Length: 318
Image (cartoon, rainbow, N blue to C red; front, side, top):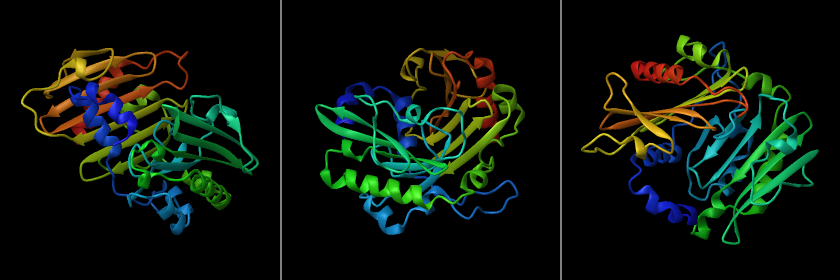
């Protein structure tokens, strides 16, 4: 158990919805080859760009690498090894015009330049005086790659990935990206369990989708869509333990209010400066969350009614 998890455990006891969503984050969906628009299998994905021996070095828990868009930034065709407190990396395939220094996740100190690739930046997150997360964003020629090492937040040092191996992973990834990788990886094909990127409800809410991916496991379904204007749409459904009563809106998250959605046990709507989200409990065995995030907080917030309609379309498809 990580220090950060232990710190928040008291709040998590009653948060059924947040717990279920965290389980969805930590689940290890099966990694499948990324299909192209024509239906053929792409030659590579981010997980396949790194040599196996190096993957083993950054995978102390022996988890299954999962090909997906990176959580928190859907512009990267990524690879996640394990859950939240592990390692993830990816190649940026959608350009929203941000400078390289703007792509580094915020840390406890301002990002610093690093002597890696042609240009690079590094940020660290500290807790109680110790580094628990390291992020690198580096440009190699025309390619931008990112590596996030959150394993340092684990209590057990055997589950840590060293910063030396983190940098080795970064360099190997940056040097392995084929010239046409971004063009080949910019696809919108998803598993049939997800709504297609051109579903009318999605088009009505976010417009044209430029990039989409899915990750399907035994207990979790995740569908990610990046609109042409860089609005992010994410749908997650996961199995949860049986409960005697539906969840209450206040356990769905801050700013949540109870809403009625036909045919489901309980639902809540969240509207704040970061997102519009619909949390739905279709039955006592599953829970779903649909999140829409505008590309810039100064932009008009996504339409709440439209988000509810998309959530209903996902549930109908399931």
